[in-house]
Image (cartoon, rainbow, N blue to C red; front, side):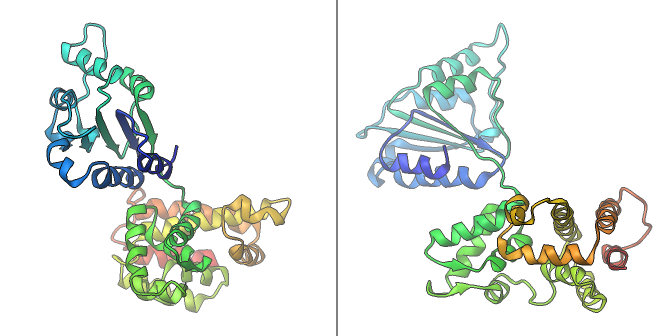
Length: 341
């Protein structure tokens, strides 16, 4: 079940007595929790029947004692436990404490008039626990998995479309490259961008660069293109800019981008049917021409060498191999020189 499907059920008042929202990606957990907090109870009902607790400040006995109360002048009471990963859940061993038994019993037989929400973020709840099995029977469990890098551009396009706007594939790809996999950060940046345009305009690279603070000429996307074209002058200009602005262009982001790109170039070269390239590589068909160009300019052996170089310099940038007092900027200059020559 997706976050959108859960919210759809909540709107239809299809409610469960317990919700365990867990996983490494906090964005969707926050979406569901925010909707519940804002909409499940009326403003009048919230005063007596809505409680928000935090895992590090609460314990299960306090939470469940509250959960066993009946609502006042309402059909339901809502208890939201944020940062539930910080809760002490109790040991599930033979001879477990009375408190652990009390916790287990509640989740097996939750009060129907209480909606207890456990927002367990940045990690997956242990599915081997008896509590997990109890909640799966009596309530609803939602696992929020992190998005993969190759899915980011499509995710951005879908998000923008849901807001009633349009974005060019290359603009979505640039945002994905620049902003990384933090969906909350991406959503915030998109929202800020949409405030400055009308919905009859297609968001292009220029608008992204202007509103998100990405340099028009000096970004990872442009460096990638310059390397593919084996353009030493452009490569040096971009790398020098990166060296002078390390906070805006961190080495880890540059290395991740180049490694992901050339790994896909290698995969492209081995494809028996290039017509399936977009689907196999997980990229928008608009960008396949870039992979064709890279495959022409770098043969398979050279791409193997490039992937090896990227791993070597990634380790150097993290201090795994001694580089003396060499800066990230100097390492990047050296790496790009070896790639294009």
